Amino acid sequence: MRAPRPRRSSQHLSDNALTVLRQRYLARNARGTLCESPTGLFRRVAEDIAQAERSYPRAGRTPHLARQFYDLMHRLEFLPNSPTLMNAGRPLQQLSACFVLPIEDSLESIFDTVKYQALIHQSGGGTGFSFSRLRPKADRVATTNGIASGPVSFMRVFNMATDVIKQGGTRRGANMGILRVDHPDILEFIALKQDPSEMTNFNLSVGLTDRFMRAVQRRQGYALINPRTGRCVRRIPAEQVFDRLVRAAWQSGEPGIVFLDTMNRANPTPQLGTIEATNPCGEQPLLPYESCTLGSINVARFVSHANGRAAIDFERLRAVIPTAVRFLDNVLDRSRFPLDAIARHTRLTRKIGLGIMGFADLLIHLGVPYDTHEALAVADQLMGFIQREAHQASARLGQQRGLFPAFNGSRLHAAGDRRRNATVTTIAPTGTISIIADCSAGIEPLYGISIVRRVLEGLTLTSLHPEFMRQAARHGLPPARLRAEISRTESIRHLTSIPESLRSLFVTAHDIAPSHHVRMQAIFQRYSDSGVSKTINLPAQATPGDVADAFHLAHQLGCKGLTVFRSGSRSHQVLSCSHVQSC
Image 1 (cartoon, rainbow, N blue to C red):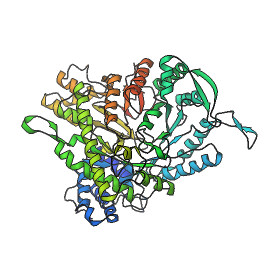
Image 2 (cartoon, rainbow, N blue to C red):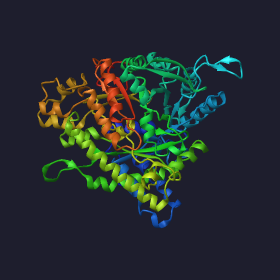
Image 3 (tube, rainbow, N blue to C red):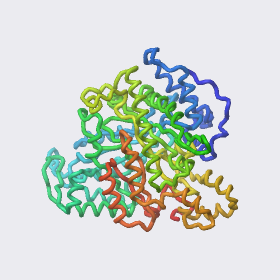
Image 4 (tube, rainbow, N blue to C red):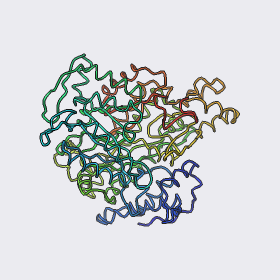
């Protein structure tokens, strides 16, 4: 299963990619000195993941699989999630990115979960929690004759634990905290991150229900339910809570929202339980103790130029998708999970998440502006194709290796969909792996033509979009003056020194109407078994009404959640167009 030693060097990687790889991914010796090259990393990962084939009958094995895995990664056509790149073939061998842990309404459960969270963060994973089962503040504690401090107080314990655990020596832990909208402490939860010093290691989302959304639309009240007793403690106007939520998201980008009923209508194994939480970025709804391994195809690399016209190379994509699905299924067998319960529950459903990155770059290569109906049509055609091919690849693996153990009683069983994996497709954010692949992140539009990323414990990475610079050069634009102009702005639409054809093609996030952002997310959700990570980036002048409209439209179109971010609403933001935080 060994991959032949490559003849190419890492010269095809960008400077930013090499910086990220050296800082976070490449192996170091006992003295802390780098002892691995990028090609060595891809070879290490390919050889390790291919070893899973030994667990299955020889008749179902693919020849030269390690070489196929290596080629996919080395050509930057596919990359797995960060823990796989970091840990495969190394002593830790924890390869999954996303975990959900349960929290029951007892001190023992809460602090057991804090311990489990620490073990996961130490291994390079992120954690998601629902705090909705915890009794509200000031509720009775019978065992001590005391009163409860409420879920928000315990969330601070989880946040503090994250502060002191550094993931696998490479990065700080990430968490998702979710509270149902009908929990009595929901208003305290919504207001929590209006203080920028609070919950700095958490993303927060409110778990919205269909009943609540109907109450908002009808301007009705709804019940707040004590989870300990199951009884209504009071009724409040739904519109009041929704307005508080909208205002908080407009002011700071948090909390986001997840639609609990929408997620559970798509829950592939409802016989195992109800989904209450997601991973930190929100794209992976999971049952308690489940994990998921993710990987993304760089679709910008799949463009053909037959007859002088650019088009998606679906034949090459068709050849790559089964290899990527097999890679992710193998990861589940090769991963050493931090808890026995996680190993057991993960292998019961064998969830994988194949997604894409480089979508904005693909549209540029095709000559299609992101903010057009044509771009929505490209998304529909592309992701529909990927899901069909990925499902077929999982079905073939099911014939060779067996169906996921929880198949009987699942929604797939009822539909006659015999697959190896309960979920196959997911759209992840691809934050750092898109830097390695030198492509646009996930399905996001370009944030700007000139970008400053603040990543990796304060490291700053700057980049100019290479295709824009190539096309600008063909138009004879002076590069020095052009760099100065585009580094001061998130949008180039108003720069009349740039030809209109470039200004319309190189559309950036703040040029795009919020409704178009949501419609794009909804199309990808249509073909994603799990969820979709996408940020609805809003300009600084966006209103709370824009946020409210986006929330309503997302629910109407079947999105599983939504995150908005208004430029300048935080003193620190990961992406900006220059070294000045707010452009």
